[in-house]
Image (cartoon, rainbow, N blue to C red; front, side, top):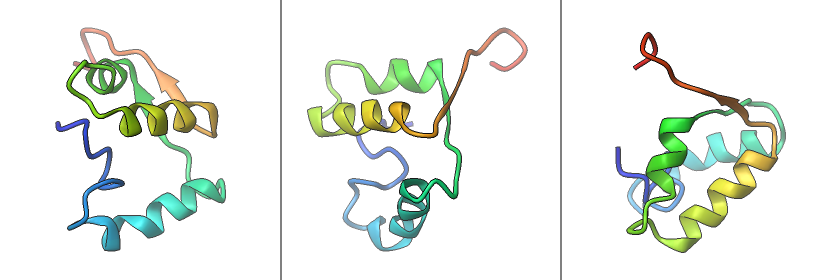
Length: 73
């Protein structure tokens, strides 16, 4: 997974197709499930700051945090 894109949010080629999803997230119509694996990927040094900032806002919204274990991996 390329954390620099987070579901097409910052990918110019995908934004037309993904913006309705992100709009639904903002309206609390969709619950986003965020795993610790995704968080680890996003918080890597190479990830652009705007993606990190967006991810932190996402976590403060209606996101549900899950922790992976052997079975989920």
